[in-house]
Image (cartoon, rainbow, N blue to C red; front, side):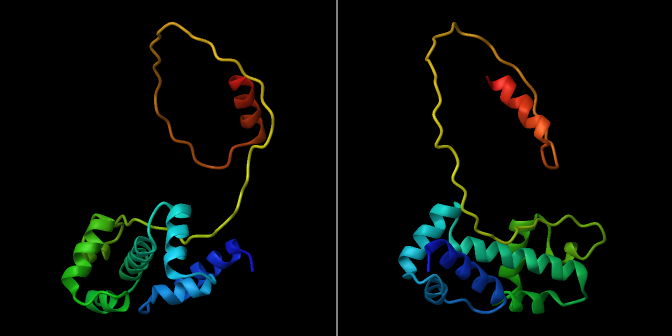
Length: 164
C-alpha cells in the first residue's frame, strides 16, 4: 500500500474514533508505519502535530454540539476527552474565543477546524527562461482585499498576462 493511502487511512481512523481515547501507536499502525515516523511525516505534511489536529477537531465538534443541542457542558467535555469542565472551558475559550456557555447563544461565532483530506499534487516541472536585472530602489504601495469563490479561467489568464 502506498504511503499516501496509509496516511489517509490513519486520518480516517482518527475521525471515526474522535470521541474515544486515541492511541497514537494504533493510529500509526493504520498507516503501516511506526509511531515515530508517522508523527514526523504528519507534522511535515500538515504543519502541526497529530495532537494539535485531534484537539482542534474535538473542540470544533464540541462547539457544534453545544450550539446545536441541550447537552450539558460536562457531558460534552467528557465525551471529547476532557477530565474536568475547567480544563475543557480553558481549551474551548482558547480555541473559540468564547466560553462553552456563550456558545449556546443564538448567533455565537465559533471557529471551525476542518477534517483533513490528503491530496497529492505535484506542480511545476516546466522550463522557464529568465534573467536577473538590478533596478533602482522604489516604493511600492497596495491594499489588501480578500476574495471568495473559485477563480474563473479568465482571471487566471489575466494574471498570467500581468506576470509576464
